[in-house]
Image 1 (tube, rainbow, N blue to C red):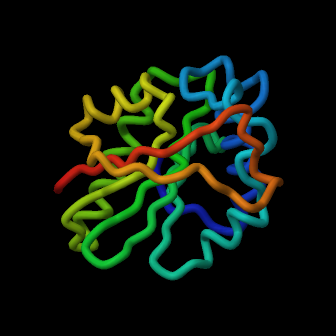
Image 2: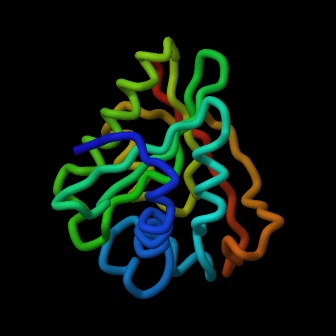
Length: 168
């Protein structure tokens, strides 16, 4: 079941996100960044702050009382930013990511957004292709991969983001 996450969920979501993006466990799934970035992806304090941000929603997918997927959504004007789409590595490829993406787009429409956009590390071609299959396009825009807080990862090589967008 997909619902809005709350402060009581931040520890479980931090564990989920880090397990899917970083470290050896992440290599069980196809969305890992473990070969590109060392360190953690997020922590409970950062997620608690995200939940408190005006215009931001963190959705979770629960099955049998366990959070197995999440996505961060931030509305700005008539567009919604989508980030941190995460599915437990051992069950990726089963359609849960697609369900989360649909829920995100439904929320964007309900909030009168005309588009959904995101950033994806340019080297993550399988992920970029997955988003393209779901109607997202490469806008041609690029952004530097630059984070000032070392707690959230140290790139192993030079990285950049591409900006993808889907008109609703």
